[in-house]
Length: 174
Length: 283
Image 1: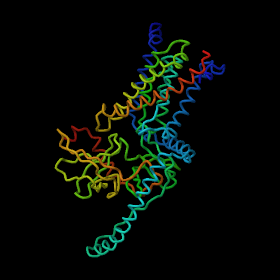
Image 2: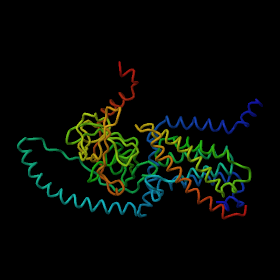
Image 3: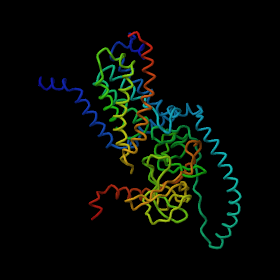
């Protein structure tokens, strides 16, 4: 991704936004169709959330929030979930990730362990919101449900974020 | 006007966040995707097409589980086959004696599962038949073991089943041995729960749980599962009953859709009562 984004083709913001949209569509389909192969006790990493955080760190809070909403809405439609639930959680996660935006320092942040901490924090906030609305039709305690699924999903997403971090770290021409 | 523009530019991040959060809440109040009608069919069709394209990819965990469950099922079936032959003879004799009306078996539509979304607590399965194959939203799905779920989305060629392990599952059920009624729900655990059963009710571990004749969505007497745990919680009038589904969802490959739909008049009536405000109902 680092080499892709440093290429001339993606120097223009519009091209990068199109790339985010295409990635969001691809990841939505991958989530629904392929991620069951890496599921551990029904828990999977949230690849779309990693994309949202990437966008927020690379483009800033405003774009991160918008990408979060768009990616979340796309995933709600693709997965058959309650419309707006992922959009809400990812919008807020994108906004939170935007606080860590530093001009021209995106790849430094993404290529370091700091990226994992940001992903963990944003995934925690994301899952807190998502599972709060998820358990509403159920007669279960939110905290007991969140401690099982919310925390597990947060940790798995953080583990998955190691791959983009290592990839960017190895392209240290920035 | 200039001040307003400056204000918007200065706080655009917060304004965007607030707007998008409000939009998300508006969409959530809009409800399930099924209300999008034709658009839903396009999504179901597209995802179904992609899932069928990747259906050949083996899932080793599921295959191992399937082998184990098939061996177990084979053993059970051979035992039950012998019992069944004996029961048929006895049943025929008893029916004749009591002159009971012959039970009409409902027609079944055989389908293959081409995709399962059992990740991140979204438990759906996609089947290779849709409206062109006679599948309609609201139909119940079973296997030889028992109840699988209900059709909640269709396109011309594909259908989506909401499995038992789903937060929206609500099934009127009864314990076969003691005729105790309850509601089957899923609460995020591996097993499903039989709710609203009073502490005085006679329910034991191992009891068979079937769909109730009171169910307005499912035909009665379909096997749901077996009671695995009965506990009385403090400060509760009800028992906590866990039920192991009879169907092994990890190895689900073929399902039968029951060509039967609930009475729409009954559902409309019950839904209208559910929607009525509680104060009005109390009147």
